[in-house]
Length: 355
Image (cartoon, rainbow, N blue to C red; front, side):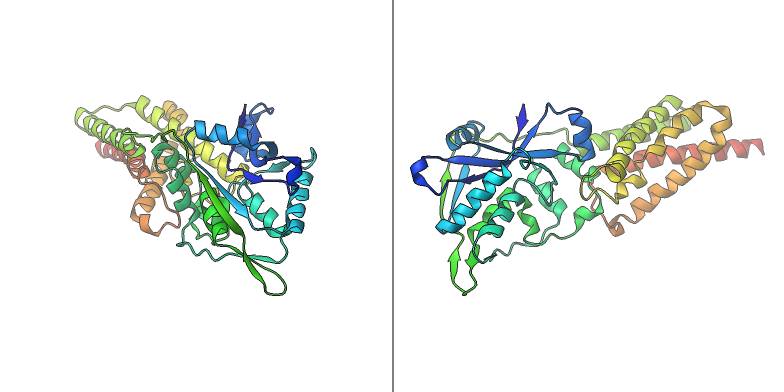
């Protein structure tokens, strides 16, 4: 089974060949050894594939996607250079490359190929509104709130810098807009449009929208309310649910391990530094074993003191943190902070009774 993303279609310069080929830089193979681990680590090796244009169009139309064909205004020599470059890239030793979502993907490769093989320079007249990488990712995932939440957790503060107009072309939609107004300027100053014609092949299928009512924010709010209610019941009933704290902080610790891995061990771009590690980190796993051991009670107290301080720093300095965090993390932060505050209060009450 193979995955795909935005392709680059080129028609060979010799019409007598009767060839109409799609070159797709967005192919990856799920059957590779240790695929899931390699994907999580960022060792995603994509490859260039070539297949008939008719097969490509049918597949996209069946899934409900329209196809925009931009015909480039190339000379015979330029078309030959691009065709030869594609053939060179398609050789077995060259077709695989290390994929980078922001800076070297299936949209940036075709752009680079064109820029390197036209006579002159490609001048982009496209002036889009300034956007950060995170804003562009969130727009793409706007109909999938859980995917947006996951991306916001995994991507660190470098994602919040403004992208240049050229960097924005890592998204196929922006690449299409930029190319549509681009010009080729040769050494003599002659100017011609890069795209001479645009054809849109619509699809009869309707694109399905993902309507999710159980959003991350709603789920986080429910967890927060349940935790605060339990904490209030503990206070009035003079009891303590160790199992709840054990489960809560264990889940937070496991999630923190994933963030730690993505931030410091993976090759994914823009994942480090990640300010979510202030409240979601592997050390949360220490709470359960320390709670079960009598000699660990003092260590648990100090841990909850530090955790509560970190939570308060995040909440009070929310607007000053150099990273845009998903709003759904606020109830989750309050959830963890309330349990740490409850532990501290319980210890103070015990010491007061002993005095």
